[in-house]
Image 1 (cartoon, rainbow, N blue to C red):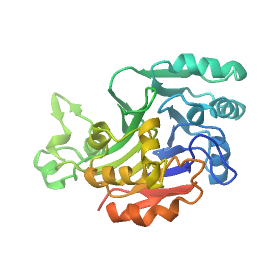
Image 2: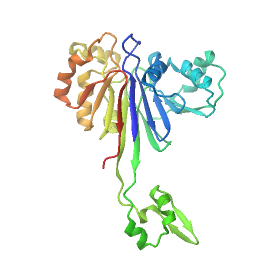
Image 3: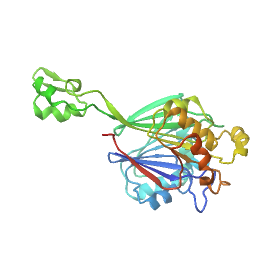
Length: 302
């Protein structure tokens, strides 16, 4: 199961009723954070989740509303006596930007590992999931992220017995591992059926609609997408500043055939996003004007 929490839904500045956009996921004992604007650690505290299992933090880009909360979070993690390494992922310049922010957090009891993205797409395999970064279209270099959890095929007991595979090795084969014993090699394909549907979540913000979003969001169980403006008359502003309207996000969700879409990264001037959701649902019925702390647990289908 994958827990997904949209910690904050605001863009540009935190508000008394809306934290800046940040996403946190929990899977198999580890946590991932995408973006860390001012107030993110307060949002985590409000949710009641823990900082300790965070082992990966990704950044879409380096505007302040997406990274300014990092120094405080690092200090909090250090004060909690964290010793395990922390991996940071982001566009080119990551280490330079973080080093500058760490002037106010110079000493930490854990190692920071940097993964800078320079290509249009990059895939990371970690902690039992696959993380794909893909470039989008903002006024600085910016990336979206897709998290995928694969699910192996069903274990076939009859095939295992047919191949005379000792039962003590079944659990290893079921995990996708190959086993060798006394010159015999047992492989997962000997006992597993076709791969089953896994879990897929796509997160993108601060961008115009792009083919890269459409491609990577395709078939997602959850698509979390920026909706900077709900007011239709602000469409030219979205184009000028390279953001998205609610309706552009809805068309992307529809074309990508996702199961559900959560809108996020609202303009500070947009006090009531829910007032526009009926028009959004006319384009894509499974759309939600998300609020801070919105959470879902995604499970494998039966």
